[in-house]
Length: 131
Image: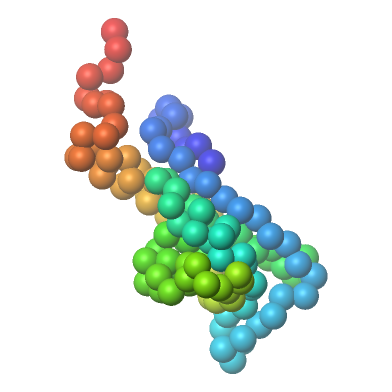
């Protein structure tokens, strides 16, 4: 996803998504989360993305989408990318409904990534726009 400033100009940065859909999500933790099996190799690959990577799970029956920020999840639980496991179960909070607020949060995370890259000298200096 590319994003734009309030004045309509495109901003540096992006957000990447993986979408999964299901007609029968497995609800766990007293109805507060979804458990979703994911291949460990996929999770490892997604976690290495520079920009925010968001897993979106769409519940076909309720027409509702839920999200999980992969890098934050793996940062909190590095054992999820254990190379000895083929599959792991991710727990996606049902409170993480995909909506305008969550999309704006993803945009902020992307902009923070760009700022971090600039501070490390790994991103062009936007303060000197072309003539």
